[in-house]
Length: 59
Image 1 (cartoon, rainbow, N blue to C red):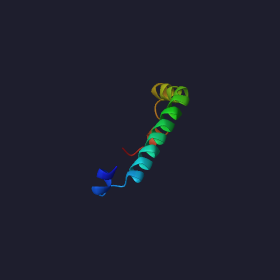
Image 2 (image 1 turned 120 degrees about the vertical axis):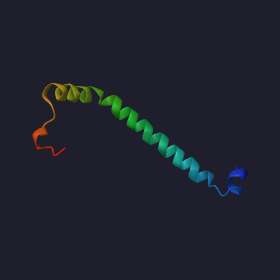
Image 3 (image 1 turned 60 degrees about the vertical axis):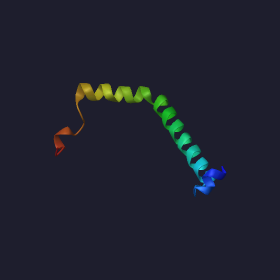
Image 4 (image 1 turned 135 degrees about the vertical axis):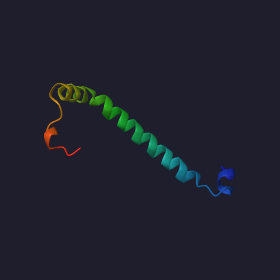
């Protein structure tokens, strides 16, 4: 830890940021897992029916 401080780094800030990033990544992973069925159903519907309001798209 002294090396980090000598290099002008803040170990506490780095640790806090790393923990926040890990929490965010895990929440995202769990949300995707919990909502997989709904996303799959929507993707299947879109493949069969096309995008809603597609005729109004400018691109």
